[in-house]
Image (tube, rainbow, N blue to C red; front, top):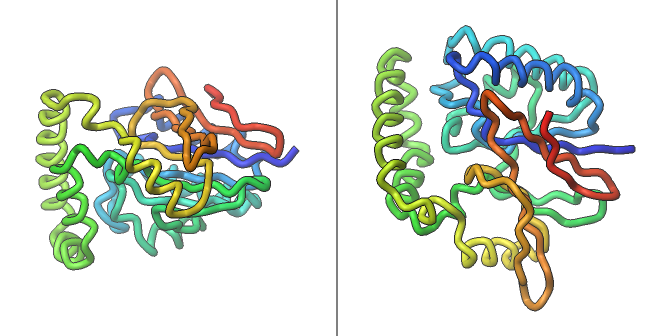
Length: 240
């Protein structure tokens, strides 16, 4: 039976060796059985540009290259951790870049794909930061800096982010009903798949009097690796 897979928020990092192993195993086995794989952002904990020479990432790029060569179409969306993925990454892996948001036909059901961070509209500080770092001029200036300097900046930003998360109400970091409704209405669909919030599950929304479904893909960690598997019959979250 045809199958399309969705993953997000793997946050691959040299220190998370179990997650790296799970990812490589997934690309080499389960993903090869699917006709398509969608990576909805934050494959990496941090991606500093296509010249990032982190040794732990090289097997991941090679595994993606082997996966796309095997016949599985792999689509990748930039997340809030790896928004600097560029042409070099795409060339090395064979992945196809998709914008956020992105509309697909999922076995007859029009479906909107997003990373999910733009739906967290209560976190105005983050939304302002996102607009800054997604601006082409900011990215050009950042990428001109030596890789070592970019690493320092990323480390500092991560520490600030962790401190902010500890002192921020959890509801502020979740999606808002208004943002979800607006996205679905704008694109005229009743199904949304996203990541980012680390709150996996299927959530029901009422859009123009009609039931809509928001499917949230889970983050990966040292204990679980959850994917969303969709076929013509159903969609379900599966723990590898």
